[in-house]
Each structure stands twice: as C-alpha cells, then as structure tokens.
Length: 260
Image 1 (cartoon, rainbow, N blue to C red):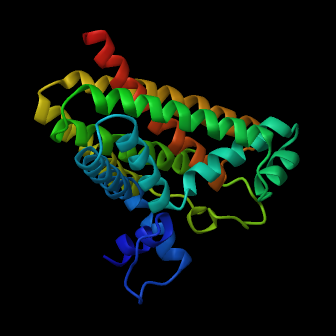
Image 2 (cartoon, rainbow, N blue to C red):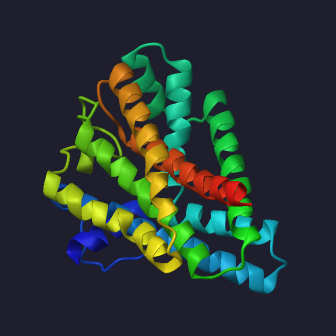
Image 3 (cartoon, one colour):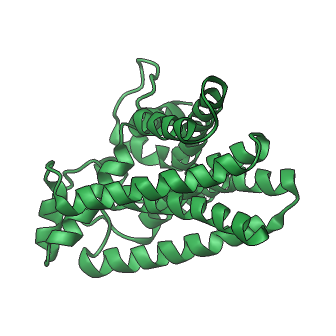
C-alpha cells in the first residue's frame, strides 16, 4: 500500500496519507503501479463523461469535461512532457541542445503546435468513440484501457533504455534506476487488465490486435530516443504515454468505422 500511495502521489494530484514520503527507492519501486494509475485516471475521466451526459446533451461538452478532468488529476504531467519533447526535438540538432531545450520550462512554437494538435486529435477520437454507442461497461473499459495500456507502454521504455541525463536532475530522477523483469511483469498485469476485461465482457478478441499499433509506436519511439539521446528522459515517458493513449483511441474508432 505504501508503494501504491507513493505512485499515486508522484503521478497524480490526488491526496495520499501524510506518512507517505518522497523516498527515491520507494518511488523507483512504485513504478509497477504506473499502469494501475491509469485505472484511476481513466475511471475519473469515465465518471466525468457520464456526469456530463446527465447534465448536458451527449456530445462535445461531456467529452471536453472528461479530458479536462484527466488533465487536472495528473497535473498535465504527461502533456507537459509531450510538449517538451516537441520543442526539444523540433529545435535541437544535437543531444545537448535537445536535452537543454526540454529542460527549459518555457513553451515554444513546436510544443504549442504539437500539444494543440495532440489534444485536438484526442478530443475528436474520444468524441467518435464515446458518442456513437450507448454508455455502458464496454465504453468505460475502452476508456480505462487506453490509460492503462499507454502507461504500460511508457513503462516498457524504462526497461528498454538507460536514463539519458547524466546530472540526474529531472522529474524522472526517482525512476531512473530502471525496473526488473519481475516488476515489469506486474506492471503488465495492471496495464493489460482493462483490455482483457473488455475482451471477456464483449467476447470480441479482435481488440487484442490493438497491441500491434502500440508495439509499432513503442518500437519507433525507442529507436528515436536511442538515436538522438542514447536513452530516455521523463519528458520522453510523458510523450510516449500521450501518443500511445491517442493510438488506442484511434484504434477503437477505426475498428468501429470498419465494422460499420
């Protein structure tokens, strides 16, 4: 429970017991709960969407409110990382330049355009996914699985690459020691859980094919980070989470379109 609350404290704005501290060792071991945090964040998004459909007509407003809720509960932790990656790789031509730009707290042109485009795609993908079918367990599991799978994808990057910053001075410092195979296996159970529940509930095992585009995104990002940085940073993990989440939404929308 201490490790769970440590992860909750690190990855969200939600309150935790006062005795939970910022021990680097605990934060490192708490990485196994990163995908499980997706259950919580996704659940809050689903709950907000449902409440929005009760108070307002189905459509744009409930979807927008659900996005705002997930951004608030995480403190825009991952969106900030995605914007920094856009700025860093957009404006830097060397490893040192990229790392320096990503560390800058100011938002540049590449980050603004990248984050705006990402949020726009996420909004319309969610709108297509949530507005077409009646709200129920299947819709809720789709939403939650996007959050858990995307965080699992980011977790695998920690396993695959070394930490890129030599000064160890960033938001990812506590998890920079990497994770073991056993820890990754536990994280995988949390990450795949909602998708497996969705397949069991609907009886549609075709949803397992969504792991293919996720694997392709993971492979490309790992190769990209390794080429330019020789490893990952906290911003790279945030960007990975955001891109993987959008890919899952797009996969659901694409399947729905093809089936129609």
